[in-house]
Image (cartoon, rainbow, N blue to C red; front, side, top):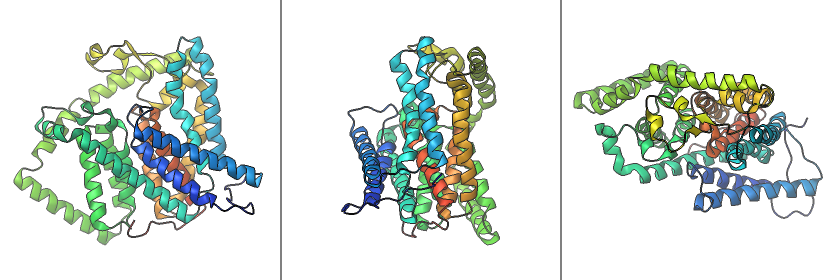
Length: 414
């Protein structure tokens, strides 16, 4: 099975299809970053995203028409299988009382696994660098959007009057700060001041969002990065970190940080044991009733199961359509059919990334970014977000391509 597609082999074609596809892919990525938590069809970001996606799809059709051929990677095949299994899930969903609208809301994010098929052919060094830049630009635009939405609430979070910024905007539940942090951390060719500023901004937003899981994942990423440095670079980082920490401690600058982190982590063990445990038990119970195809996407879950304490009393509905666990969600809603489809895709992606991490700088950055996203999927519902799915597919495409195109790295002024 061919691993890539050559673009623009037909004679007489004036427009460079590869460059056109790359341009619209980059616009699509930036548009995805700016989508609302629940995308509004009439918003500018949605219109840009849909227009760029439509243009990219059209270019693929034109390419097939001109060349009379269409090559697929195994990842493309597995992605299309996921789309097909997603379509099949409508039958058990309707059987179990899920409305067509609710099913569609659960199905749409998985349909975007097909994005990786549209990126096939953009596997040269120039394209991979620009796709990486597009993700960084998208993360930067997302930061500007978040700051504009939450600037007035930040002092309340630092003072403890507000527990976290996700109470102000749900757009912060999209893990673009974590993805951006990991990409920038491993792209060592970026300008030092730009890199330090970006890392600091992403880290502050993760802290203000109050995501304990993302803070722990960032800590793990830092350990991985630290372990891969040479002795001299490692010593410099330790010295710089100690100096900064001592300066902040001496001025009391870290007191709000410690207070807030203490509040957020105080009950983490109890919450994980109760809420996540109840969710998984509920998922396994329903899986046992329909092990082959599951109960259908968006199968209802009682709010009392997915929320700790009495928080569920504040909800207008008695049920939600998700749990905070990707494996549990797939088992419950799509059964063994979904597990095989997603398992084949993600095992292949991680295997490709493991080899790509040592082949190029971009491949390493994309691999560890993808690992943080997959780890986050285990304890969150981010797998149901269109934005996260699109970024994940771009990361998978990059690591798959870097395995075949080694030594790819961004320019120093990227």
